[in-house]
Image (tube, rainbow, N blue to C red):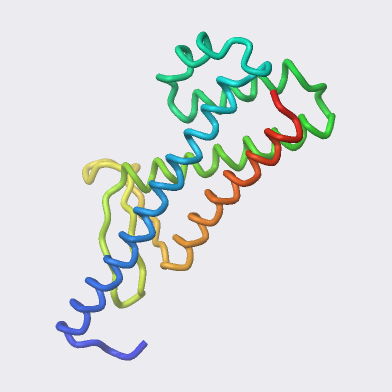
Length: 164
């Protein structure tokens, strides 16, 4: 990359921040849709026979707890090694990975490196020895967004093919 003046770097940083903020905002929308879709799958378990009871149970669950509950339902309904069990298990692993990234993105703090065209997510307190930085290009953030969308599509497919 060619050298930028301070003014050019400031403009580039502002533009990069705005673009990243748009992607991150879309991620929040998509993740909340995924969270609701997962919740609906859970409360309609067993063909909705316990709809009210499960709704009252699941309503306060975190996304992590919903994933754990889905894993329990899958283990109860499908034999380990069966195609439905394998597919749900793979989906759950990807969902946990997306959850971890989402948590870092939401709970970390942000800065922009205009020279490297990266958005930097800083995780941990400044005084902590465990503090770490993760740099994201706009393309990488779009990939995370695509992963969240993929999870939503796959969950709907599995829900139709193998209801819990």
